[in-house]
Length: 189
Image (tube, rainbow, N blue to C red; front, side, top):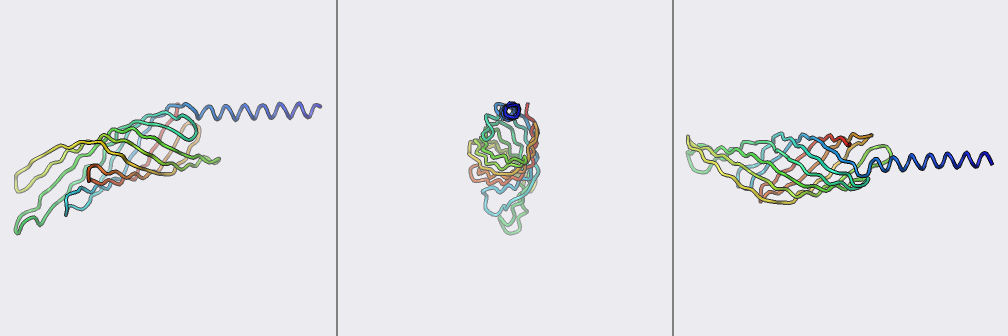
């Protein structure tokens, strides 16, 4: 009889601890930062692509152990392109692109018992591009903005209230293709 009561108490304690742990994951708010290496390829033929470093800030809500939603700001790197060969004997045209995005992202993730996880992202981006061109002492600038979807996936590690991720994202901003590899840290509260 004492063994069955002791077993019931232990099982109840384990059940309570399991529920408390699950509740701790559910309905948590979080904030985070990331740094990225961005490969930016404009739609203009002959420009190629360039790499630059970017950063981001985000905040969100973890609804359960698999689904979260976040909003954030991403500042992509600012690459410089050189377009040459436009005419015989002409100097090259230099382009600078400054690209940023405000986004809302949903994340589907699976966390394993050891704390490692895999995830997939779908985001709606409101992006803005400032472009500057200079040629033979002349210069000009322009601005383009729009809204597009982006996709991402990655791996990470989660313990207590800390999460570390390595993610890859693919963007297509009206023909300008951006591939981003980022390292992120987030804190849940």
